[in-house]
Image (cartoon, rainbow, N blue to C red):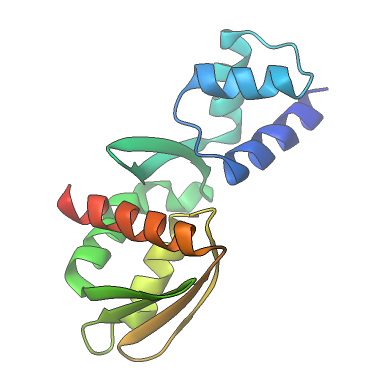
Length: 150
């Protein structure tokens, strides 16, 4: 039961921006799991979930590899140091970076695990990110702008 619940938690946080334990408990209940807040809290600890900025001043749970959980601030710093501009072409997000920083910025954005981003390709100073929809592209741009403001 715990294994299937843990698998469902990972699936849910990859699909939705879940900000609180209460929200996670509600999603689990909707999926047919009878959980208490204490169970959800224990599951979060056992899965070593972390919170990262999700935009609009909110945060969301993500699964970061154990050795990556301390890197969220570093990823945001890489964005601040390397990103020059963003523009969209339909559902493709084009990010311009300082020369030589495209790969580092792409890794930083990928580490944020935005559910809207399908994949990315980085050159020397340009990144092209395939995003699910035009609306999602605007959402990702807003989230990145919010991170840069913090």
